[in-house]
Image 1 (cartoon, helix red, strand yellow):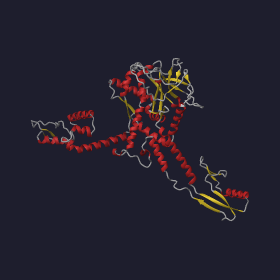
Image 2: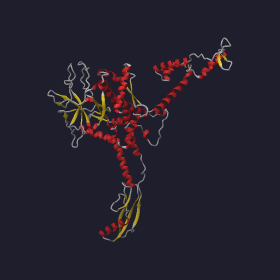
Image 3: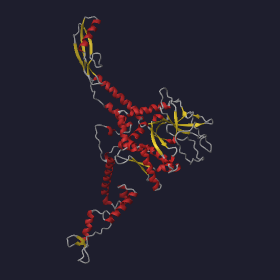
Image 4: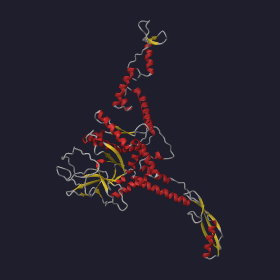
Length: 552
């Protein structure tokens, strides 16, 4: 049986046979070529790829539970996904898409449906964190096989430890061979055999078994039925998909070791210890040792602290690692003596801990200023924004673009199943579809305000030279940084406002009114109000203003 669960989307537009290349397709998605048999395939992991991937995902998840690493991950996730009570974390942007307005409205409605299937407005933080920590994300697109034109009915999350992308290249006998298809330099086609079957294998019990690195029996699922996005980081030597936490493995291990060693050192060196020199006289060795044990049991600290319950118990059977020293002294010495050993010095030094913490944060691309406890949060001026903050903002932008593949994949399936677009049309449209993520409103507002203030101040300094050294168009484009669309929009709005009389400042209106009064165009009515002077003094009209366009 070779039939797969799920569905597949066929692209009718195949590439021309005249398009040839000796280079194999670049598919850095963590897939593996393997030897298959039957519907329920069993794969013997000879090279340990499955086991390695299983272990590395488990390590990523353990790392995310460490306090320092969790703090850094939360900073990244909170910066990428901004939660707001009124606005959605992400919206679709179709301004660059050259299609009709009706089709744009349909695409927006389908995108809203995709977000509802994911419950993205509620679970956006969880979804993005799972993808960021694991370095991969899987969703099963469930449809009604009897009515596929109704689109996706449900989207189910799949644990990354239970699914794997596979490729099988069948030979003449129909059996799978583990090697990759070799390119052929013929003039007609690229590959001798292009019948490479791609599918996902789902293991309900998980990839890794209890013994060895052998994956158990799994169910094959069609490739189009699974939504799979990766981090884009690939270990080219081992052909493994990595997470953004991978380069922090060494730094986190070093931080853990230095913290544990510091705790042990302080526990052992912090308290003061006493040295008891006990005079045993001329007693034989056995008698001297017995006498020393009696004295120790008499003066030993009998109180024991239970860290689990917080109780203090009187128990002599426990020997503390911080116990005092008891040494015998023969006749002829100075008799019984008690001296004190001082505790360790400079135990409050944390420079090594701080160094490894900064090293960990740098490996996770999080600015140190965000995590430092000494410095408070400073919204600051735009001139005070550090370089690492700009780098962090660009890093978050790259994460958003990579994560947007989730929406593109689900939206593609939804539009094609409902016969809204064809696979050929989608290939042309997908490059022009963008996604607008919600930013931190307060920070963005302060940044824009500061930039606008700087531009306006510069414009005031340049204003005396407009018409002599600078043109108005130059000021609009170079100083105010207005685009062509913004310039046209501003001119239209100013024309409309000036025509209505609402676009002229109050000072300018007063100056115009004063000029009309001096020219006799406006006089005083009988009731003392201002109005236009009529030709017939008996007919006084209501005051009017005739304000023309004014360029400010």
